[in-house]
Amino acid sequence: MNYAEIAAGFALLADPNRLRILAQLDQGEDWQSATQLLAQLPICQPTLSHHMKLLWQGGLVERRRQGQRTLYRLDRAALAALLTDPLTAPAGEGTPLATTPPKEAVAAPRPPAVIVRTGHKW
Image (cartoon, rainbow, N blue to C red):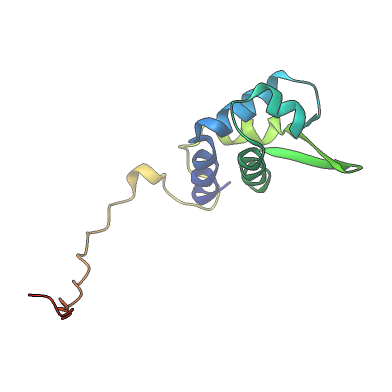
């Protein structure tokens, strides 16, 4: 896992709703449907669908189709890999992220001021 993947994984964990979903998947049955998750979570169905898509794309959740239903389960191996010593340098990444010197901040140029006459006093 490289630093970009580690950062993306932690970004997934930074949302309270996604943490609740992962906790529910960890406590529940092996595979759970959205209906089962919604019964235990204080969110609506579109919100759950959005978060499940992000968690699946991030590799923290597995999904499978069963008829018209989609079932989900926590990928414990992926979560463990993310949480196991994330600050050490991954293979091929060179030095750890903490020793990388910061880049100098460059101020963005300001756009020119535009005055629009609207028929009122300026």
